[in-house]
Length: 427
Ligand code: EPU
Image 1: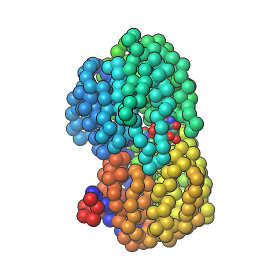
Image 2: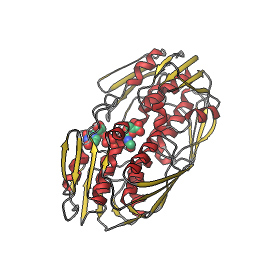
Image 3: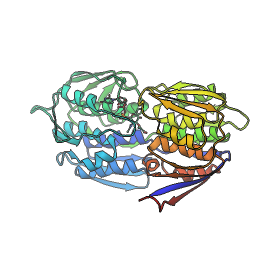
């Protein structure tokens, strides 16, 4: 197992290029199960979650060739239909193959994912949507089994929102099942995230007839087949946001290039509220906090275009360097605060309870050994380590490798002292 050794206390300075988006890549790769011919994807990030999805596609009788950041996938009409527990357990996004398998191969099985450190995370809305399209869905010994009716899936009107609002992967999953269903499907209460817009654009480029992406009502006219296509993955707004927050927290000057700056607006606006100068080009965003004392600003996470939950932990780390009381309300995953206890071990004046965290800044953070608990919490601890005086060891960074491509290299390019090393104390 690897760990990071960070010598902190220096401002980050310079430019880095964003990687392709993890959360756009995963559903688009799952969608390749729907396509005739050979799909080719560019700007595919080198991440553990992407490897897991490619391994899952191979286990479903697809041929996968990866060369650098390009991936080619060829999928047969028929083949295995079951996503095994060992893969679903590693990555919840594996459930995204249910919709495409059901649409193309008439049946689909996936182990029911359990809870995770972000909380319970049910998939009831995914299953409800597939049932509404006519699938027979059952749970047997921890495995979800879905079977399309003899005449194939049928378009339907489906309500996609639940008690916590819309679901991103639920919208993707049901939409992918509906593209090959007979007739019209109308999905209401859909997620409006950029990753859904990207998936729709990709499917439409393959011959699907989908409209309404970016709104909460998506309308799909079923087609009989989809042809594989070449697709370039858009930039990762969460990776870019993490690097900008690392720049702001260290009072540095950081530019992230090859981004879609409009997708970073929820973060840029929040940084501006905190008094951090932000410059925005069409495909780059720069923060320059060298001459500023950032001010505490409270926020509530929410679905697009609200502040993303996937930047909440990193904002909490940045808040340790803001002057005053920051309150962070988590409306998507009320239990997503495991980073707070570790930041406190570094000297943060912070706490959390029932869906809310607070930080009283500015805090003089001290380097310490800390343990990463999930992907974004790990990123928050890295930001803490970059700010802290002295040495921070971030253990279990395999969580980071799920969603950040060579993060330490980008940070080193920005002048940080970060070393990846084998952690001989951990199994
Ligand atoms: N929910 C339900 N029922 C469902 C599905 C979701 O109640 O059937 C609830 C969830 O428990 C949660 C809320 O709805 O409270 C929203 O969850 P959503 O389904 O939107 O999450 P997701 O699609 O499983 C994706 C990202 C997450 C990101 C969320 C929210 C991927 C692979 N994952 O998850 O990314 O936090 O949307 O934006 O796209 C990350 O990258 O670190 C990450 C966790």
